[in-house]
Image 1 (cartoon, rainbow, N blue to C red):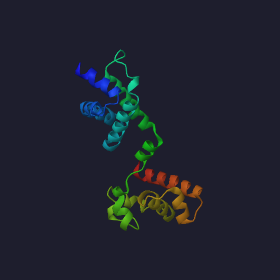
Image 2: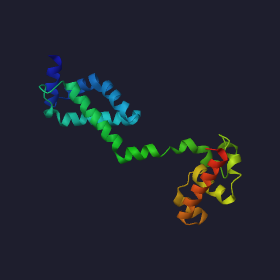
Image 3: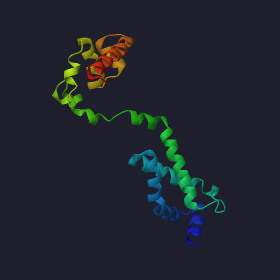
Image 4: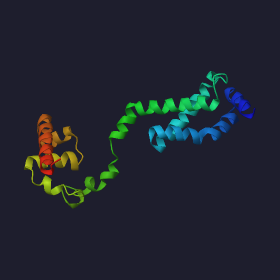
Length: 176
C-alpha cells in the first residue's frame, strides 16, 4: 500500500515522492544502465535523464500493466541502449584520452625507448625512411592521415598506400 501511495503522489508531481522513489530505485537503475553503457559517468547521466523522463511521463504508468519498478527499469534499459547507439557515444569510445599518450605527445620527436615498450622499434627501424616517417606520425605521434599528408607534403592517397604497405612489411617481419 505504501508504494502505491508513493507512486500515486509521484504521478501527481509530488517532489517528496520523487525523492523517495529516487532513493529507493537509483542504485538498481544505475546497475542496469551501467551494465549496458560500461561507463560510470555516462550511467549516472542516463539515470538522471531516466528519472526526469519518468517524472514527465508519470501519467503513462498503469499499475494494471505491471509494477512501477518494471516500468522504470524498462525506461532505463531503453535509454541506455539508445545512448550506446548515439553517435557521440560511439565516437567517445573510438578516441582515447590524450593522457594515455602524454609522454609521447609532450617530448617525443622520434622513436625512442619510451615508445618502444613492446620492442617494435627495432623492426620499424629496418623499414625504409619513407615508411618510418609515415608510421611515426600515424602511430607514435597520433596524427590523422590528413595531418600526416599535410606534414609530409604528400597526397593523402600516398599516405594511405604507404601506411598499408609499411604495415604489411612489418607484419611480414613479425610473421603475423
